[in-house]
Image (tube, rainbow, N blue to C red; front, side, top):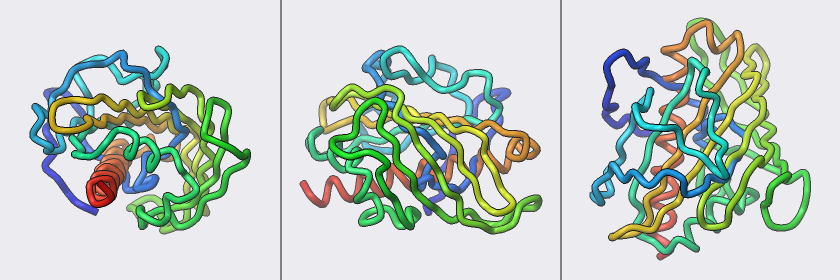
Length: 224
């Protein structure tokens, strides 16, 4: 998992949990709407991250992450591939393990194209921390909002032996720009156990999201 530099903002808590939740951010998938058009990557293709964004949260159909959550992370990258390719990779959740090593298994609860109301359950390893043991997290994600080729938002718990994240909310936005598609994502975690060590949890969350974007970019651009 890469360890890109994190641009910190004054008063922001910086750090993230590994669970890549697919390389992830724990989550429940929520498709995002194109409410947010700020393009901070400048079309360079470089990933820009912030643990506590100064701008408004990403949304899908007006719904975003839990703004009151102590553990939250946001990042983005520019992908030089067709939007249709990126969207298909991202929403064909059953094939995540083929391009995301942190996703060890996944199964759909329902069938057909991913849509609002869809659920899927997947697993990912979580390393030991000063307060929790190494374990495998079982994540149950429920799609709350989804707009094809635009955004998706999901949410749900992640539970493992000795570790529990009560709820994670994950939002994704996809915007066509010069040079490709700007993919932005934001996620939060809540739960007494992870909130007991906000910096460590935030660090793991961030690492997971960075890895997810890196894998999505590499796979989409290679296919293109």
